[in-house]
Length: 376
Image (cartoon, rainbow, N blue to C red; front, top):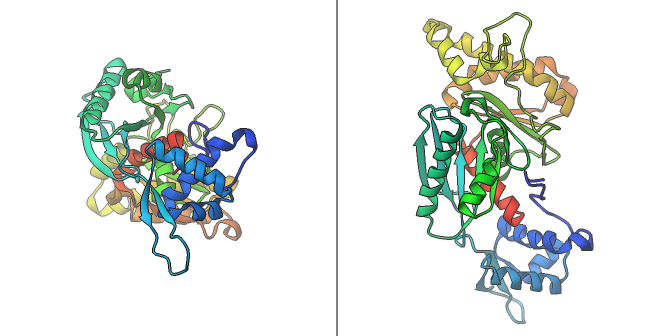
């Protein structure tokens, strides 16, 4: 997979000599990151690199504090026992930020395995523009102050359209247009920063920690509706960095509510959590299932052409389980099957994420791991 910074997330083979050192370094780290407890000879066999190359790379990685020797393996055969190696998983921490909720910004310190060590949050309280950026900076300062190890990097999942340089091109709810958030944080904290759309961060988390297929779409449903896409294990961003912005696709020809964008019947008017709750509260309790099923049908209508065009193997929903996992998801699945060819898409998996509300924070960690170490 390719990270938001254009780096391979999971290297699996040697490359041309001019790119070899950085790639092979990541190849060794990836082998240890996923499997751990390997000798130099094990790594050479599994990667196809020579033992001399592996030894030189391991020496550098030990000097950089990224790899540690664990001691000798117990051998049953004659000869000197091999020394086992592993990634030093306590050597660094990662700062992850989730800016996608409409009432607060949340953040966490994470270890190199994506586990959360500490949390912090700040109420948004309607802040926009520079005031909202100030709250991002303050939240980051609080987390860095709690770090007991060097910070490997800062990963940020932001709402809106974000380019590959970490500029938030458009995030209307935060009043950001052309906000160079990555540069602002890099200059302020002098550590590497990666900023991406929150749904794109979430699909990376699902791939690294949730077992997502290499062809998958994650639908993130909250204040708005967006999607992250993987094709052949590679994130899809689009020519204007807006791939997955499906919230303002009009679903159906029967009208619908007026959207904040000015159109009528956008997917967000049916599916965003505020709109969904409003419709549920306005309906008799006996009609709740019908409201949820209708929202699911609209989602299925929007997704069917995408699934058909891209031949996706998996669609994952991320959002409040009590609203999404039930009649809504069942109606989405039924609509998808009715609107695509069973011959090709009958085995499509539709499921909830198992990563819960931390999915963007953990995706932010994946972005840093990929950009800094070439692992995921």
